[in-house]
Amino acid sequence: MKRIVIAGVTGSIGTQAVEVLAGNDAIAIVGMGAGRRAGELFDLAAQAGVTELALAAERFAEQVPDGVTLRVGVGSIEALISELKPDLVLNALVGYAGLSVTRSALESGADVALANKESLVAAGHLVKELAAENGCEIIPVDSEHASLAQLLEGVAPNEVSSLTLTASGGPFRGWTAERMANVTVEEALNHPTWAMGGKITIDSATMMNKGLELIEAHHLFGFPYEDLNVLVHPQSIVHALVELADGMQLAHMGMPDMKAPIAWAVEGRTRRNIGVAPLGLAAVGSLTFEEPDLTAFAALPLAIAAGSRGGSAPAVLNAANEVAVTAFLEGRIPFGEIIPLVAGSLGQLEDLPGSTFAELDEADSAARALTAEAANAIEVGA
Ligand code: MG
Image 1 (cartoon, rainbow, N blue to C red):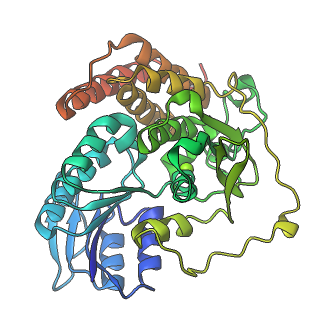
Image 2 (cartoon, rainbow, N blue to C red):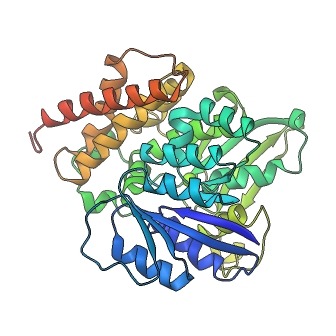
C-alpha cells in the first residue's frame, strides 16, 4: 500500500485529491495538513479516515475530534511529513510557504506531486538538486506540466524542438491595460474556464500564472526559455503542445478538469476513469489560438526576464507578486498596479546568486518588505 500525505488539503487541489483517492484502494492517505481552516481539515480527515493531522495556525475555534493527533503551528506540516515518512507528498499549498513542505518531503525521501508551482519558481535549481540527492521524483500536478510530462514520455529528448503551454487568457483576454486598470476583485475572480483558488485566479487574470508556469516548465523539463512558448487558447481544451523535430506537434487535450492531472500525478503516472466528462470535439466545435498580448499582459515578459536572470530574481518576482495580489484582493491597490509593483521590486533589488535556500529566504523577505511598502504608498482610486 502506497502512503501519501496531502499538504494544503482544504484548498481546491487538496479536496479534489481526497475525492479522487476515495476511489483508489492501493493508496492510503496517512496524513493531512492545512493552513488555518481547522473545521474543514477535521471534516476531510473524518471523511477519509485520517487521524494524523497538522494545522499551521495555532488558534482555532473547533474541538479536535477524538482519536486525532493534531500538530499545530508553523512547521507542523513539515514535522508531520518527517514523522510519517510517506512514499508521496501532494504539495497543494499556495505560495512560497509551500517550499519548505517540498523540502521536507524530499529530505524524508518522499516523491512530490507538486501543485505548489512557487517551489520551482523560487528555488527550482535547488529543489531539483535535493530531489536528485534523495533519489526522489517531482511529478507535476499543474495541468499544462502534467500534460507535457505525459506527452514527453513517448518521445526521445533529441526529437523535441519546443514546448508550448496554453493559457485561457483569463477574464480580460483582448482587453488593453487601460481598460483593465480598475477592474473589481469580483471581475478578476471570474475565470472563464477553470475553477481555482483566489491567488491563482488573479494570477490568471494578469497572466502572471503563465509566467510562473514558464519558469516551472524550464526547471521541470530543462528547456531554455527560447524553446518555451505560450499560446492563448480560450477554450482550455488543448493543455499543452510538444513540437517535434519533423515539424509535427503532439497535443494533450481534454475537458478542463483538475481531477485528471491530480489523479495521474498521485496515482503513479497512471490513468483510470475518475468521472471527468468525455471530450466531445464536435460539441466544442472550434478550437482557437492566438499569440499573447505582451503589452497588455506585461507579467509574461517580466517573468521570462526574471527566469532568464536566474539567481534570486524568480524568488523576488514570486514574492512581490504574492504581496501585490494580496493587496489587490484586500482592496488596497487597483488591479493595474499589481504588475508595476512586481516590476518595481525586481528593478530595485539586487540579484543574489541564490545558491542556498537561506539566500532565497532572504531575497523573498526583502521583496515582501519592499513591495508591501510600495503597495502602502498607493491609494485605491488615486
Ligand atoms: Mg496551470
